[in-house]
Image 1 (cartoon, rainbow over the protein chains, first blue to last red):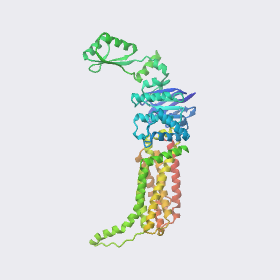
Image 2: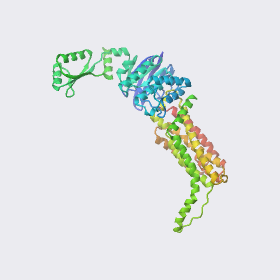
Image 3: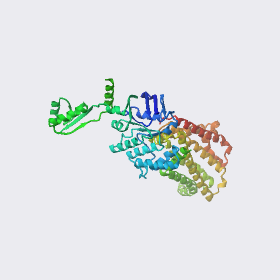
Length: 303
Length: 256
């Protein structure tokens, strides 16, 4: 069964067409990565699923029930973590979760039990202070707790890791992974590595429509090309390397960049540096951008 | 009902912890004390001034004050308290829209009209408590210093003034659903008051305007009868209901 079904959705704000004939199906118990650059329409899609925006065309079904704009009945199945979750700063985390539980119609004793479990899970069990003093990471973790309070069938997270440090990111990803057994997760991001870590399937949103949808294993198998950056100790070495290797561009005093390198050419570069005894500070392989990955996959599909 | 009570509890907690409850009650208590205090002090102030004025050749006759003068002060000072109240509470929806704090509630299945009704309940309860505290304090001092029985239709007049203010309060959710800025919201409330206030100047329309209820001070001296305000009462109640229904309709269609 599909937990979420988006069918031929279009949405424009004035003359600005944000989504064009968008189609997505998310099966139950799947972690679905919704990838796209800033402004691609990820947040708009999520707000449409939540009935916060009215689609110009198309239908959305959550748990096989149609989403109606302005009415919130399908939201009973959904837990939502906004990109910047906002809370009532005058409340403590447990007071906030209690209110959320009451709004979702949970029984008082179950609210207490569930709140304690969730606060423990997100590492806020010992926090008795009011939310207004919370850091961004703490708010994000509380955001996940509030989204999961009523054991939703579908958890929607809008860029949950984008503003966090590596430790915070890992914590959030671990939490999302841990809820997979009971909940279907849709999370948007522009960070590829996050998708690879936890997702089962991913869709690429580009210019308002899905340009690519794949199982994560297929994306991982794509042979990626990325830029390699080498810092030399001396500029003469950098220039000498370019001359001998026959490739590369000097971008700073001692820094050379070799573009579009795959895994085997990376090994070749390392071997070449060692053979010719170049003195270097570091060699860095840059993470391929989303655009690079699109291009690689599309190119591979054509060939 | 659980959603409504859950959100109402949050509203109460907010008023208490933000200090708004304390400040609003303080304003109404101060106004309640000010009415008889100003009345009581007026002869003394005039007496002080008359000494200086006598030197310039002006004479001021001795002034006697009573409960009626104090109640007249009540109707003069209450608009100040009401304006402060409106400034405090006009942003109750706008702040939530701007900070996106309602998103978590609505995405949990909170029915939108319950948000409006919970907030309105708290605002009207606070207005009612504050207003009648002020009334009670003025009444108590007046009874102590003078005699309230010389004033006619006291409760009826105060009730009409209270209702007129509830009608203006009912514009808050509608203006908030229509606009996203506090300035636009306040302007709408002012406009909602000014239109009937100006129309009231046309004699034939006067008795139908909700703002006519503010003239209920005339009941105290028997210059008018309670029946004269019947149309204004009915129309005010009707407008309150219409404001609430339209606010729910507009809020349901609002993209968040």
